[in-house]
Image (tube, rainbow, N blue to C red):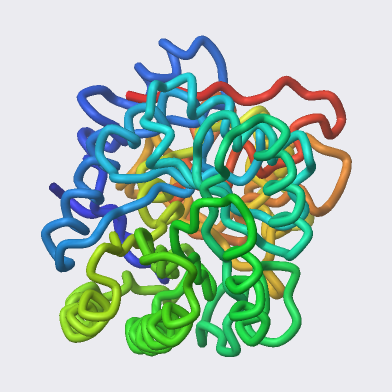
Length: 411
């Protein structure tokens, strides 16, 4: 398979190019757009997701994989991915309801997130899933709900550790956080559980995400495992599940390179024997979202207009930040950088230029590619934004300016 080369981005290797046209799965992108009936459209490739999960299973020691549904909650994608992993992690009652409709085993579903409403905790209790407790209040409410319904809540403790995941795109631990229970307060919380009619399941320790530095991930996993071992001495029952978080990132921007799995595998092979000696009944899980699905998704929009303004080329499309907020740079970037972008029906064309791709919205923030080398495009051509399978459609302000939402295809 020929890689799609860029000036500064890591090459795209998961898709084919034939006769200068992007292929996804068994068909050219123009055919998928015709099948969808309109643009913009997200296209997600099953094979890419399966290959990524197979790669993780082959590379790492025996460990459970959990899919973080928030990364991409498209129901068909969740149902497909759920068949390939050991657990699904949800972050709202809406995600829980959707996941339950897939027929996934409730015992393999967990619910994390700060500020769970009483009705969300009640839904989780009735479904029989694991609730990752993020505060003393959640434990009290869930225990009371259990008494009211004559059901025993299944609970794990989400721990806010005293360390961070270095070089992380999103840090979710260390210092003061809305996430989890501070590690120094966990022993008291576990002691309280002994007096409550709840089933203790284990620990959820998630230090951060979108990290391409294998050494930083290994360090966080070492600290996570040691913290879990220390806290297990206070547990009211044997640990059945230890979720050590994720952190594995994908290359989006110029200069990014894929995270190396070999040192992470070696590190886990070193850590897991000690964990299993202290917690012999525990299933150890790695929680991944973006890493499993981001590179399987492509956002496709169509060039509506080609404009030259004082020497600068603008390709105005029917897509934009209302559909793909992350690609616009408004979803966590401090300094905006381009995602990998191509003219999907002209890849490899000899005639190239530097162009800026924008959407139809009345804001200068509606920017999809800034001064990027692309094939010369005309109205009707298709723009493809890669690495769009995670935090794309569902993480964007779809109602902004009342444009139609994008379509989604799982192929």
